[in-house]
Image (tube, rainbow, N blue to C red; front, top):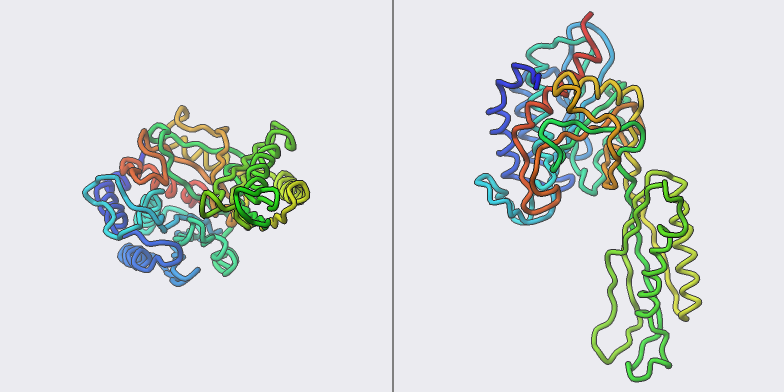
Length: 387
């Protein structure tokens, strides 16, 4: 590993920062203490400017290089998840029902480590914009930062981010050109029937029968309506109905998720869900109303920037530890909004075996902090060299 020496020297300090953040997780846009911690560190490092309160608790900090030039953006997410920690580590969450179970504390620390190094050395031209973002876990903080104009206000030309990857070897980078992570949508289906006595089902329009049949019909979208080479996930995750064993209820409810990479496939799923709701309504004498919620778009890496990021990764971890043609992932990421506004790339950094993200026993591997920080720093120095 060719970790930057100065950043390697910061490893113990970075671990301390990361664990302090881990002990104090915050949710969504309410990352007040986290943002205060980040802002204080940035002031200590001597960055040139700090703008707080973007997307409520987000931060954009600027570090100027030694010569005029463009601005490169580096992003880290700061928010945690609403879940109880079961990791058993001594620095576990102090906030009941909140946990850094996705490693955003680690991402924030990596960017802080890079910030300290870049503010000390300034071995680059132009500027670097450090984007510390709240509300990645469902709140769309990345979209809000874009809506508040950070790309134009800070004249950002390119933007990059990384995410830890459990069950990938320590220090291995994975990415790909084009769709890297999926668009994620959800749907609710409200079924209205006619309830009655369970002994006389012929006098009812049973919403449970309709719900069960509709849930099975939804699975035909993947198996029969889409091209096999187009990645698609449609999952029914909730069915609720009824109150007692001798009552056929009036209503039933279905909930689920749709994950796609193509807007055409997304549109097809929406159309088929509408058609299925209409068809099963007629077949079972009920009314099924679909409410479809579009979520984060697909995270789409730009070709030139992906190649550049992969080259930087290779300079740190070696050729064998960079997969530039990795399989895309069906999870979603609101960095997608930033990549819709500016060219850039999103990479995954292996942290070794252990519980997956979003699991109560997940533990971030502090060993990868200097690797991630070195990647961020080298992205700036290689993209905007002094000569």
